[in-house]
Length: 230
Image (cartoon, rainbow, N blue to C red; front, side, top):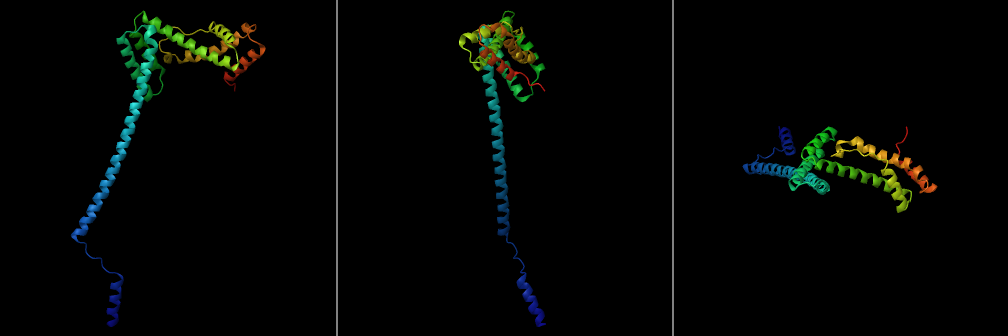
């Protein structure tokens, strides 16, 4: 009997029963859980706010880029085309909307062709040839920049660079009737290859102007820009 009592006492000392929780203990646990939930909720709210800010900042940046692009595009054509103030405002909004759309969607030539016709409808009969003429001038200027790059590579002086430019421009056939080059990507791409071909074809005519070393340097540069043969 004594041994049984001693064993029971030892077991009781080794595995004491937890004391019953008081109302205050339970309230404290509940308060701790509520505090943890509130902290988690605040963290999620902060993360959501930061994400919304990033989205808003990205949207504002896209709109700013679109607005600057639209303003610059209209300024390029307003004077040579003689756009009215109302036309300039309308076309700026058009380009603004187009740019925003292109920032969110993949490139689509058909979309640009539709836009070109929309633009054509907003111009008068007199303005259309002025607009297409300005676009042709810009393409010619692009070709001139390509020739200037070649001239620098060949170390040509200003006089010889001018002779090369005149010879090449006389051979170029720049597309007419284009209002939006983006609606004619193939023609624009061809202008680059056409310029390179015109430079090469012009070299025999410039044999009395360019030295053999200068012609060799031009041909070497042209070879670097030719498509690699597989």
